[in-house]
Structure formats: C-alpha cells, structure tokens
Picture 1 (cartoon, rainbow, N blue to C red):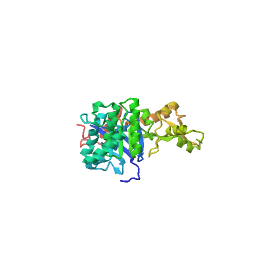
Picture 2: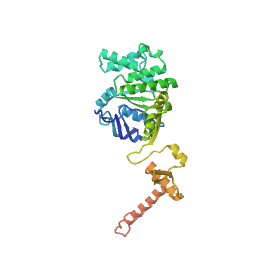
Picture 3: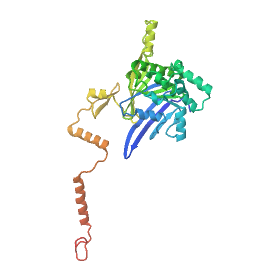
Picture 4: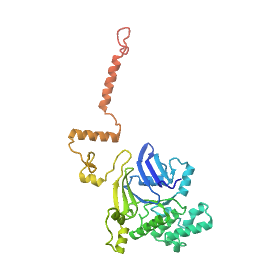
Length: 363
C-alpha cells in the first residue's frame, strides 16, 4: 500500500455480464483517477455503468479486464479471501435506502457498534469510536433512540456512521439524498463534507440530485460504460486570483461569500484511443448525427457537421456503421441458391466416367 499515489485508479476497465447465452458490456474501457481525500460525484443516465463501477470499487463484483486499483490493491488480482478482507477493512457503504445499513430492533449506537463488534474491536475502543462518529454526524444525543423514533435524514446519518464504523479509507455513497427532502438532503451533504474535510476521507458518490452534485470537488459523467466528461470545482476566490483580478474592494463579508461560491469548469475526457464523448445537446444543436468534419485550427480542433457527402457516400458510411454494430449477418436465400448452383457445377465437372463412357453417377 502506498500513501503517495491516487486512492483510485481505473485503467481501461471492462466489465461483461453473461446471462445465459447473452453478453452485456457494462463498462467499455473506463478510465478514472480519484485523489486521496477527494469528494467526487458520479452522474450518468440509467444503464451507463455507474452502479457497476461502484460494485467493483466496493469489492462486490470483479472486473472482466483492465485495472481497478484502490489504495494500492489491484482488485482484479485479489483472491476471494483477500477481496472479503478488502471489503471489511478498506471500504464503507452508504445506500439510498438506509435500511440496507441498519437493523431496526437496535438503537442508533448499537447499529454503529455492530460492525466493530463483528471485527473484534475491544469494548472501550468501540465506545470511543462510536461516540466520535455519532458526534460527527450530529446524533450523539439520540444514541439510545430506536430507528422508528428517527426521521429519514437521521436514519441516513446513522447509516453514514455505520458505513464508517470499520474506519475505511474510501466511502461509497449510492444516492444518499435520493429519498429525503431538500433540507434533509443538505444536512446529509454537510455531514459528508464535514467527514471529508476533518478525516481526510475519500468519498465517491453516485447521484442524480443536481444540488448534491454541485457541492462536490469534481463531477464525472459516465456514458455507455466510459468516462465522458468531468466538471472540476474551483472556488471563486481561487479563480479570481488565477485571472489576476483584484479583490481589495470587497469587504470581509463579501470576500467570505466569494470564497464560499464555487465555479465548475467542464472538460471532455479523452480516452486511450483518442475518442471523445461529446455532450449530446451540443451535437443536437449543431445537427451532427453519425458523421462530423474535424479541422485543425490555430485555436485548436474544430468539429462541425459533415458537408459534401452525396447520397451514395452517406449510404455507404451508414451501412459500414450498421455492419460494424451488428456484426456478421445471415446471408440471403439468393446467396445460398447461388452457392448450391456452383456446387452442382463442380460435382458435374469432377465426375469420373465409368467403362461404358458414362459418368459414375449416371445410372
């Protein structure tokens, strides 16, 4: 294990699920790097591969190919025993439904201490760590309450405490604000940010919540099993410093507000083969469908709608794309008839005549 490298490194990560005779490619060469102590969000349409990525990073599933390295451990090469140990020691989970983390007949503190008890942690250490966690999530005063006495947000904060009970280096949060109201969602995000800043905890969060995704350090978009784009969070004050703007005219309150606000800069991810996944709304706005024209200019690479394609060229391009997508197809019946005629001709050509001068098949 190294403390200098990134917390997560995914290099050309592939995951293929096989159901009976069908194969589904969930991840198609995904590349991702997450720094230690980073609070990162993952977004993308349904079926893009977000859940598959989380399952692999959490040790719940194995990649089919490529690399998935977390805290120096290559998850593809770990034995079943080592993978179980990785789940127990390195990673914590927070699910959309708090019930997946919690046992209803236990109190708040008992839920948080249960993973520690299973791990064999001494009693005094369990009590100290559970108190620290419950104070961090703001629930120490309600430690003896049952789950039925808690609100949805308090249950989710309890689930966060359970996810951190094993002192993981990585916390995976799957839609942690998906089933709560706006105020409660903000409380959960504040809790995660507090844990990230005070414990140096690396957090990867899958979310569809626009408000939640605007409060993380970086947002990575996944489309069709690949990283498509990323938005990097930069504080307004940092941006002003880089641009050389003077903030001397601002009062203390204004400076504090500028520091609290964040600007996001979006970048398109370039994969190992030089492919770009451009935002769909850009392509629709420009009328780019299956072909585009690329030119090198002084300012960079210019992508614009393809021009000058006649009908035959466009049709050939479309047929090429369909053939590449569908693969080998069934040949037509006419093709089989032509092969049958050719085979019959070959048989007639190679018949050997018998002694009577007739062919061997002519009787």
